[in-house]
Length: 237
Image (cartoon, rainbow, N blue to C red; front, side):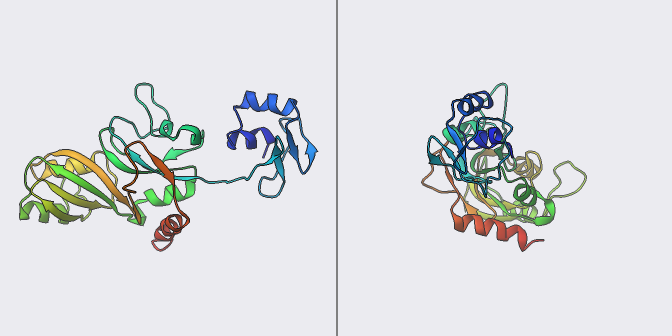
């Protein structure tokens, strides 16, 4: 990896800022001063320092975000704030959301730069559970619940995969699905003549939304959470 790319990934600065930092003689590799932006390094092997401080290379980052309403699940957008922008000082150019939540949907969203894991989590073959707290416009009948659990026609020529429904009260259910079709939960409720008034994702695979996170707040995944996440896709190979 080029030293300038490494420094950018470590959030030392932009590409142009990093070039100035190198010229200023603030970076050493294995105790040797490096000023060339194209100098090649092995991040997991070489000792790289900036202003005398060792830079620990972490190839992959994993964040749990409590997505607020009004924010889009994207890396860039011309009209609205993005979930990546909510990461503040931890924002990196290579981070992206794993899947999408609608602009008005809130709750658990995973952000990472681990493309391989993200691909596996989103693969239809892995059947990863996604659970939503759904606020409905009216009470679901037992027949409505049975239809949702068996699968419904949302206008794509085939019914959805079987779901799980846990009724909380007259206007709230937990709905667990394994697909991620466009506006799927809203379209499923429409299929049983109901309407989603509010939607929050509360779990994704083995991850549950950290209740201490306020809307817009985030944290890194714990080692235990990451292990469970990886185990989920491995056991479903």
